[in-house]
Length: 172
Image (tube, rainbow, N blue to C red; front, side):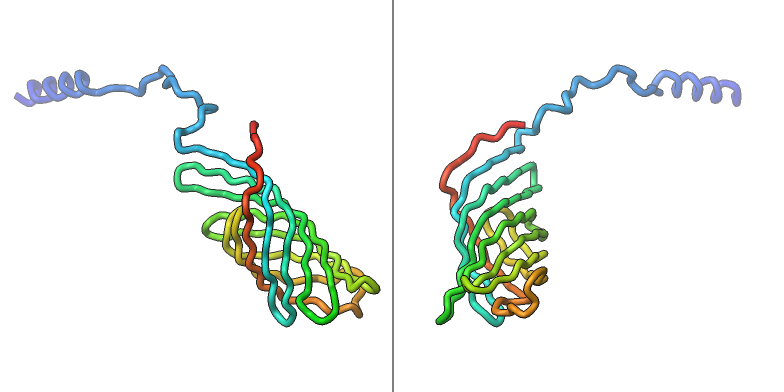
């Protein structure tokens, strides 16, 4: 009887047991998912920078946004100018980059603050929330050149948004 049970168990297991299939599935890993989407645009950038001094910001940017399932990543490369709201004119031409997702982002920019007589070149790393068309950040200006020129914010809170002017074609 024991032999019969053992024989039945071996025959049953060998009949229903299967090994791994060796033929590869017909999947193209270069094919994009149906939820994948990319868009790129030339944008008008407007913003407001505040701490001790108040600055408005206006300029242009190239914004790139990638959507894939629930992942959204935005990149913004921009050329703007900060304008101080004060009785004495002060400008700050700026070039920078921002990479963000809904959970947060990082960026950096270089600004040359000038009152048309004196000036200082600053680099500002920033962190915050937002993507390519909208961001709220905190940054710190590191003065690289004229240490006596201090008519700008060391600490900066920035609210920035972009409006699409022109959709750009994007191909990898």
